[in-house]
Length: 140
Image 1 (cartoon, helix red, strand yellow):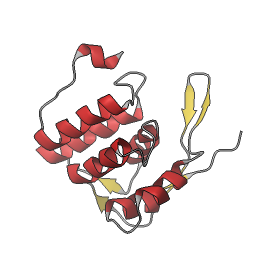
Image 2 (spheres, rainbow, N blue to C red):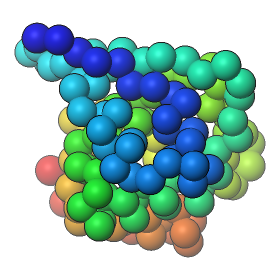
Image 3 (cartoon, rainbow, N blue to C red):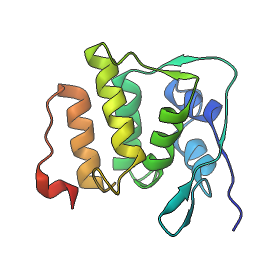
Image 4 (cartoon, rainbow, N blue to C red):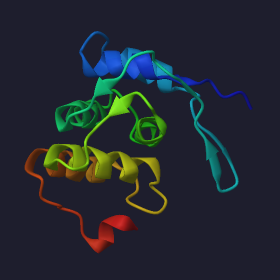
């Protein structure tokens, strides 16, 4: 099965509102290949670095909640950001730590929280308030 790499540049352009959710969604189609317990996420790196803020991830949550991006693609985005040398966030700050925790949760939904619309609403709430709305039952 052919896997199409996700492009960091398209994700950055979504964050900066240069492209809309449809462009990002189209770039995400085919970006994950699962074989058994292993999922591959090929990525094309962008050339410059980009500072991520909670607002950027809230924009993604909003796109998912409006059905513009499928929730499972947050796994590709989370993996991309975690693995990237170009997406930056300072985990020593409250905002950077929120970004870091969220993308880590998204990158491994099988061990964190399933990527459902209900959970995306909770990720959005956490990114806005800094409070963790998740309960143990959300992880199943």
